[in-house]
Amino acid sequence: MSMAWAFYISTVLVYLGVNMMACWGLNLQYGYTGILNFAYIIFLSAGAYTAAILTLGPSTDGSFQQYIFGLNLPFPIPIIAGGVVGALLSALVGTIALRRLRTDYQAMVFLVISLIATTVVTNDVGLFNGPAGLSVIPKPLDSVVNLSLIGYQWFYVGVTAVICLIIYVFVRRITGSPLGRSMRAVRDHEQAAAALGKNVAAIRMLSLVVGGFIAGVSGAVLVSFISAWSPGGWLYQETFVLFTAIIVGGTANNAGAALGAFLVPVLFLESTRFLPTFGPPGLIDALQWVAVGALALIFLWFWPRGVLPERRRIIKMPDSSTSAAMVETAGVDQSGGTE
Amino acid sequence: MFMQALGFGIITASILAIGAVGFTTQFGVTNILNLAYGDVMTASAFAAYVATSNGLNPWLGLVLGGIFGSIFSFALNRVVYTPFIRRGSKLFVMIIITIAVSLIVQNMMQVIWGPEFYSIHVDSGSTIHFLGMVFTTSQLIIVLIAGLALVALHSLLRFTRIGKAMRATASDAELARNCGIQTKRVIDLAWLMSGLLCGVAGVALVMELGSFQSTTGGAFLVPIIAAAVLGGVGQIYGAMLGGLIIGITTELAAVYINPEYKDVVAFVVLIVVLLIRPQGILSEVASQKEVAA
Image 1 (cartoon, one colour):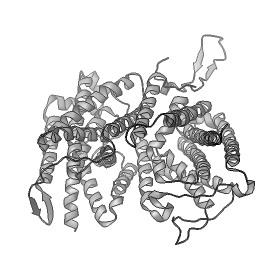
Image 2: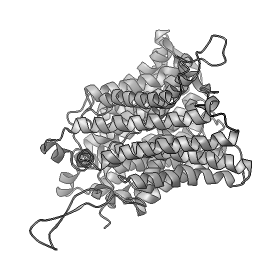
Image 3: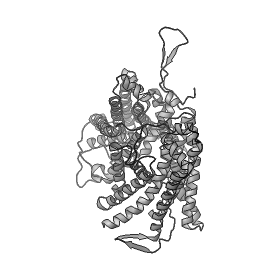
């Protein structure tokens, strides 16, 4: 394997890990709890900025970029802090967006928050260096492990894999627990869940905050790897890519979300790199967005439950043997009665 | 300074009011949060651009843009939204679908027209000074068109049978259907009218801005939604009033705070309204509804 290929493949693997984590977080919110968080990318971005400014040294007046803090902290503190900031920001946004509003109004609030955040960060240069964003963020443990360029790449793939595994176990513990069941209940029938004594507001908020934490971690892992971050990379359309990934892979299914992360942001969008470039600049980007939109529509039409659908949870009635089976309503909302 | 900003505010408010009334008409009747609305505006502007650059009078171009928007919206509903609703997609999924459509429409325009800016040339005419506000003739025509469009829509809803049917469908689609109203036709009409206003707003917007590109309408969508929600969804007068409030506050903010934060003011107004009075200033109920088709 040549150097260039090794470099490329290791980079793609890190992207895959980052996208998988991001999809698990969003799946927890959207797939399991039914929150249409169109501001999701903001929490990823908040984690990324946090990790960046904690890793970078202090910003001096003469330096080419302006930012707050600059604490020079060692790995893994910036990554954890990224997750914590993602969670805190989610809690803040949740107190605004998760009020008793219609679902579509909630989605509207999230969308608008996403737009506000982009505008503020772009215009407030002192915060995170405005539209240019931050760069030359030191790579974690680079000086400690002292590896070649390619060696470090594979080392970071390993770091990402470990963090991914931790996040996966964490998410599985939640979705497989009674809490996960409550989340699905809130998604499928809010009033019924409330009638059974579930605190709907608290469950929604918890899901949003945990998802925000995961988003923050995934953003932090990404920024530590690519060592640069700017507002252009987290426009609200990016959230839509993650939504598409979950729809394609399978909503409310962690393996499905991981598969979606592989199929959409990695396979589908990376593969265009290998096509010959044509047309004026920006044309391929625009076509990609058309394709992502079309992909979401095609899946919602033909396979609304995704490649790996949510597991149907069938509970046998205790008295009879075959005929009376009670099917939990899980997933019926998205299935659209096609079965 | 204040009066000048107010003048700008009135122009922006007129365009916003046309857009917001169109948005609210459709949203009120069908309950589909059509996030592709802004991109249909841009598409209509491009249609008008093609016609005017081939020698059509810009004001006829505005009419043409309206007709284009009308047909586009109608087709969008028939070809994409209604089939999905028939298939059982819930409100929830419909929002994702409209975002997908918005991305497709916007980026298709970018594919066809590229990232460059275009402009519809309109003779701005002589300037008119009024109480310290400065208007060009073309701006006054836009304000006039806004006024006329809203009066026409009001008369339609108030004094005709189909208008009555439309109001009935907006308040309770199921009940309206049970009373023998052909809600399918009403919904078609809602999309046609909404699209007409959408197209007119799109062309008026790019005339006023001077230049536009594929993302112009999409960027204008949030102030439109803000105006519509502020007024109460489905409330024609509310949307007009909302457009006026949002238009004037954003232009004042542009002068007194920072032009870059103009949209943020609209966003913040929207969020505050949603938190304090989600049913809007002129509406009584905003309960959870399902999509109508």
